[in-house]
Image (cartoon, rainbow, N blue to C red):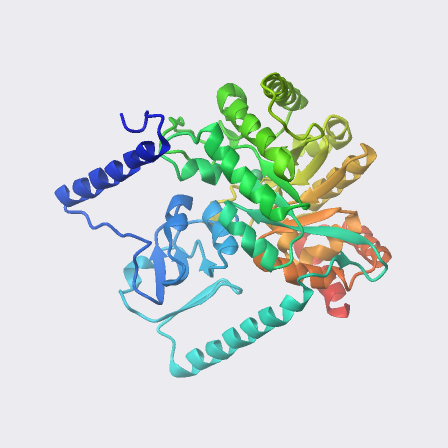
Length: 459
Ligand code: PEP
Ligand code: MG
């Protein structure tokens, strides 16, 4: 009853009652509640699995890192950990039975290693490593206000990925000049019911205003796959990543998309918002979404509500179907953004969250790199710009090939921005184009990585 009230204040009290209800049930069932927002200082969380809503609860003042038995590097809780600058090692397999509370752990999130009960010498080595890492991080701050311009004068954009308005400060402080991906589904996930148009408008407006003249690319709700909504009945599926997800949900449940479009249009007046559709594989999906957007624009116009009349509508390119036909999609979109997390899993048919086959999930696979090249060429042939917002855009070893392929913008977690900028400043376009030509003739990911390593050592 409370949740259905108009008044926002009373409406939100429904959440309090639900929380009391949950606690009461845990009490009755003699289950222990682990409240991730109230852990002891200097805690390392070790869990079977953390889902995005668990990760969102973590109190960063008390938690140093987390380790999970299940999960892949591009699962959404891992991506959130990077946004929060929280060290995380995921998919380590069954360790919970071997660990005890209050044991000392070292979590090396760079190497992806966890060391249990280290000896004094190892502890000392890691203390020094940590200090060196923090010192370098401090030095990289000097690049904050610098543009990413290559040695031969070619400028690319470096943007950040966010999951909520709170992440914006991490992007600005790390020197990102825009947002290349705002994953709006987290706004939907932290609520007890669908966020209203006004609630969404407020969130998008904050981001647009904070970024001022810089672009903010806001993706429509990408629910399904590993992201569920507590208040929405999503069917149990054999293959959720191939199932009712993202744009498919939004086109079937049009009212969700309409509400989001209207909130985005209203917020577009306060900054430079671009709208992006996830998981497109058919041009019909783009046309349908475009028609709905036009109807929303008309509705606002009739009500005399102002919005950016030139708002851009682009798509995430993350299915092979779009890579094969990129030029044709480009003719009907204002921009592309490559989602390598999904593009890799859909090109290789390797589930991105399955730790059993994590060794097969590799964006350096020549098939995936070829798909990326086709997308970039297709976008340019079709006369539009193309960015990348998958985790690959923040991979220091991938920067030279992506620059050589002609990528226009890189978007990543805030923490990766300074390192990527530093690399771009050392690159020469012709040399990178030659590197791309060489690697695309190679047959395996390991040969490709070796060739890139040689190149990176030189620069
Ligand atoms: C991607 O697939 O690369 C992407 C950026 O989207 P998400 O990780 O949210 O699926
Ligand atoms: Mg994706």
